[in-house]
Image (cartoon, rainbow, N blue to C red; front, side, top):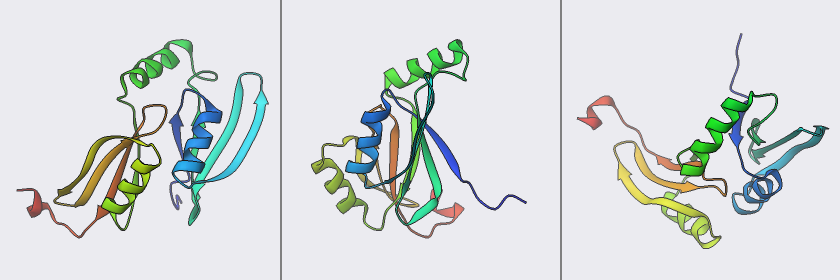
Length: 142
């Protein structure tokens, strides 16, 4: 039986820069930093209160085939790679804090039927959707 999502891959340009971004700017905790071969490094981070969900910071490449890795790098270069959704209890405050730390943003906090949402980017161009969720139903979207 599946019990939960444990790992999500985030493709990055540089693992050391991404590790610094996620730990220093977003406040994540480093869990693993293991060099497995010349071509593969296993680096994971997690939100301090939720160690059960790790983000694997990976450069597009082996064991992925070159064509697939190139496609991912092209999407990243456009700044259109979707990353992760991040929950917050105060979207406006968290957005302001992250912006003050130099985190790039696409969309300032906006009211949505499901809560307050802002969209930021990590230092590899991945979208980070910041959401202060509120109760909603399908009728809220009509």
